[in-house]
Length: 216
Ligand SMILES: Nc1ncnc2c1[nH]c(=O)n2[C@H]1C[C@H](O)[C@@H](COP(=O)(O)OP(=O)(O)OP(=O)(O)O)O1
View 1 (tube, helix red, strand yellow):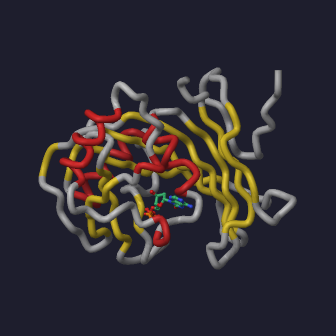
View 2 (cartoon, rainbow, N blue to C red; view 1 turned 180 degrees about the vertical axis):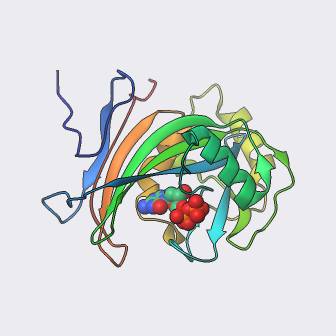
């Protein structure tokens, strides 16, 4: 059986079997890092049709759309941090479920980013803009969703259209370049891991992603 070679920094939390889903980049070597900081990133996804993103108004990642998240504070668990950040940045609560782990290294930064990614299919509260983030709904383009079989196509698409009617598609051109590789895995419900390295101008130098096998 083919053995996966995980990039440095990527660890499997459970003994799950993974298949490589993407890899590439002009760099031969992974960038070295000295320490790791822990972050979260959370997404609310309704009916596999629309996703809530936030436009980062200031700080790291300014001008990009992303999920809601930030650093795990001392004394906090990752899920507690994810729930706190979702409330602070979008004004809502949601039953978040862990769906993936991402490892990012920015050349020259003081620490690598280990990001626990969470998703939820519902939320409570009122979506609210903050000083840091402007939340908005986006329709999930069909290419980012798993293929549907002939029995479900008709029902799914009509449900999706209803929930995402009039919404713009996910703005991949205004997001971190790695997002296109793992967001479809998140939408498919396939637990995933991955690493992406960036230069100081946020150009992606090298990447690798893996997930549980797709259902056939
Ligand atoms: N490359 C990439 N792709 C996708 N998502 C991210 C990255 N790099 C990242 O940092 N992120 C995510 C991880 C986090 O959810 C945010 C960064 O959080 P931010 O709020 O900017 O972090 P801080 O300001 O340091 O944290 P808090 O002050 O909010 O705790 O982007």
